[in-house]
Structure formats: C-alpha cells, structure tokens
Image (tube, rainbow, N blue to C red; front, side, top):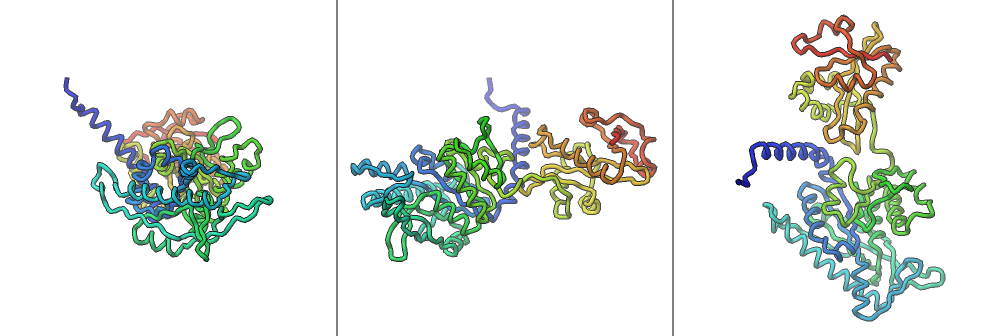
Length: 446
C-alpha cells in the first residue's frame, strides 16, 4: 500500500494551513516592531527546554518583534552551592547572598549566558534560517543597590534594581539583536549584587514601557476557586485576587509582578507555563492563549466602527463573499457605510462585525454583514453582535429587525426571527432586492 498522501489529504492539509495563517496574520501585523520582555524561570534550562524556547524567540525576532530576554538561575545557583558544600540560607523567601553564594550566582549566570548564546546560534533549525546570524547582546545594563537589612537580617549581596539603561538596550534592539539581561547587577562603585529574575524583568518592562511582559514560569497561570484558568484579568480583578489568603506564594509573586508592570505602563503582562512546548507562541498567536494575561482593562469590546476598521471588516467578510454567502462589498462601500457597522475587537484585532441600516419612516432596520471569524465561531459572539444591533435599533425607536439570508436561516430562527415575505420590506429596500439570489426574508419584532 502506498504511503503517498491522497489528493484529498493534501487539500485538507492545505486548507488547515491557510486557515491557520489567516488566523495568525493579524497578530503578526499587530506585533511587528513591538517590544517584548520575556522572563524565564531557571527551571526551563534545568529541564532541557532552552533550545525550544530559543527557536520560538528566534521566530518572533524574525517576524519583527524586539526581544529582551531575562533568565532566572535559582536551580543553577543551588547546584553551584551544593558543589561547594555551601548551605543555602533564606529569610522570608529572600536568599541571603554572602560572598560564597555570590560566587555561585556569578558562576550560574555565566554558564546560563553561554548556554543561551549557543541555543540562539542555531538560528531556526530545518529552515532557511538555520545557522543564521542571530545576535545576542548582553552587558551591564542594570544598576543595582543592596536590599540591606530586613527584620534585623543582613541580606548582604542580595540586591534590587536601581536603574535600567534603557537607551543602551534600545540601541542594541535597533541593531536587530536580542538583548539578554543577567540577574547579576552592579552598583556605581562596581559591587555585584544577586537580583531576582522577577525584579529585573518587571523593572525593565516598566522602564522601557514594553508592549508585553511574558513570564515563562513553573505555574500555569492564575486559577479561580473552582480551579478554572483565568485567561484574562483586568487590573482591578487582579488586585482583588492578590488579597486572597489561599493564593500560593509563588502564584502571588508572579501576579504581583504582572500588576506592577501594567500599573507602570506595560501594555500586557502574561504568565505562560514553561513545560508546554511552544507556550509563548500559543499565548501570543491564539485568541484564548494558554496562560493568564493581565491588562489595564477588558481587551474585548463591542464598539462603533471607524474608518480605520475598514480593512479589517473587508478581511472578515471577503471569504463569505467568495463563497456567495454575502453580497460583495468593495472597500469604498464599506468606508461609505462605516457608521452603520459595529465591530467586535479583541486586543486590537477585529474578530467580528455587523451592520444596521435603519428605515426610520417604517420604524424597521436591516441587519447585514453579521460575521464572526471562523476561529472564534461557536463561542456566542455572533449572538452578542446580534444583541448589540437589537439594542441600538430599540434605542432609535425601531420596532422590527429584518435580515436577508441564503444559508444561515437556522441561526436567526433560533433567535426569534420568523420567515417573512419580500412584500414586507420597506419600499426602497424592496426595489434593491436581488431576485436572482432569492434571499430568504427573516423578521424579528423588537
């Protein structure tokens, strides 16, 4: 039996690829030129996931995203301490970094830097970008200060970020390099301090007003009391969750960093599980993501369309026009009718639209162009758009809503529409009725 894929299989794979590309293309366009601070637990390298992450970040870099990478080193420091028979010491979760522990931290940071540079030197394996020049730049971008004495305990060389050299980092990013930040910082007098990955990443993202701060972490995200993953959190809701006593300490630490980042001007803060292959890509390029995202406000909105939405609306409706489900509309017509459109937006990307054309004399309105992106269908957003149109029609004092459809009558029947007659249409709309399409008239009393 031949193992050669059949024509049908190839066609199906091609359609899957095309659909996937159409889904991610808006994200690629939206993220090009944006700055992402990616902060990685040392456990990622410890468990052998470093090469996969480097490939994913190389792909983002190749698509035009500006990457600043911060890599933690807790397990690596623990290994160095064990090799030197030094007992680790902590106070309230903070490492007490004496001279011996500082040497271990330096050793761990140096080894990680070399491993990261080696991983990025591969380029994108099995692609035309294999062994491409993927430059990684690191340096003394961080000025640190001692944390000092906490509850009478001197934390010695444990430090906090004092200042980030933003201009130097921007200069490196402008030269098409990936910037690697260490968790070792230096004071103006040259004294070294051991910093936490979370502090470095959050401080850097805030100082640079980064578009995203992404934690690739041991935790999978933020969960509610029913153990359901919270995919999106508004800032106020995130603050409420922080007050929960039962929240695990590590989860609380990451959530606090996300809150601080967003409060400091970072566009979005994400928590992504490190043990999920391609987790960063899935979080960025899929609608629901795979972890938790914190933002200042709800990213999903139903709003009045503007001229800037014309291209997005055209992209949404074009496949249905080609399939004959919708009447063809040129971009000029969309722009002319833009005031009639409502759009469903998520994180700056249009996922749905609908239009309403009122006939005030007859106190009726036509619903047109009700479209939801294929990757988001079945989630109730078509109904949300419909309810918004119904609400707007009632607000204008209209009593009925009608729609002309050739293939989606079942959707409207389920939502209170009944089959009508062409003669029930307003006179001016009746004149424009296309008898060749023979669209079914569906009417709903508001």
